[in-house]
Amino acid sequence: MSIRTATVHIDLNALVDNYGIIKSMAPYSKVLAVLKANGYGHGLVRIAKALPQADAFGVARIEEALELRTAGVIKPIVLLEGVFDDADIAILAANNLQTIVHTNEQLNAILSADIDRPLKVWLKIDTGMHRLGIAPSQFNEFYSALSKSDNVHDDLVLMSHFSCADDLNNQTTSQQFAIFEQLTQQLSNPRSIANSAGICGWQQSHCDWIRPGLMLYGVSPLIGKSSQNIGLKPVMTLQSSVIAIQQVKKGETVGYGAAWQCQENTFIGVIAIGYGDGYPRHASNGTPVLLNGRRVPLAGRVSMDMITVDLGADCQDKIGDIATLWGAELPVEEVATYATTIPYELLCNITRRVKYI
Figure (cartoon, rainbow, N blue to C red):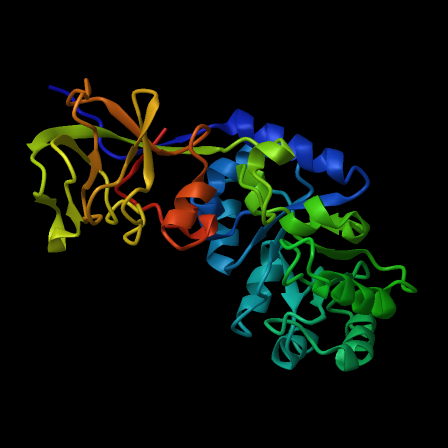
């Protein structure tokens, strides 16, 4: 007997195709491919090495940047949250890493650092998301200080981040872009504001640099538009196998808390995947799973290592059959809706015991 447990299949051809779609949308912009959170769960180094055509990579932590450098990745790498410790400045300079500046503390650390080469800096402006970024009223002060510093490369990039670009009917995006334009359009510095949703839905925001994340991995960043509508292909397919089939009678219950009750005689399939692998704990009854060319519904609570699905009274399924939890025929966006979460979380939550192919 040989049964496959939880396995992730990474389709690097789909990744490259998605990159091509992105470039076709913004042919005149440079691409900072966002690889944070282990490449959105797809493998940090694996994704970076599959995208040599990207102009730069974006990560959230200095540890991620150093992992790429150790793996031989020489492309520009940008720390999207900046540095958290003054000692990191020397590490940036030594490893040719770039950083965002969004606080007075980061500004002062860079200006006072003793380094032998200037750093490439991205100055982040808060245009309305109110998460990271300097206030518009601080822009002139920060811009002047960075532009005059010998520790800062002349090619200072000006950036911001959209909060509602996934909703094409929300005017917050236009308001944010108007603020960004007012502050930066008269300057010669390269600019960047478009994330995945901005790339797809707000063409005027493409500027000099775009920053695709979610859409690189084949997931739609827009409300009401599927990945197929945009032409994207999912890079990740999550699969596992049926490890048991149980006959259940009308009125009997399945799983912890007796959370699902059988409405008629049926067969229950047990699949070797659970929240210990990253499958969402809060996926509700009825969440679809692909098995032998049809969708079968989740029946009962997700366990650490297993889920149970209703195979129907006439099932022909067998132990060892492969089930797809999400992939090309079952978008991760759909599964996320059943789990009352977002596809970002599902992709990033794959655990280390899952095998990657």
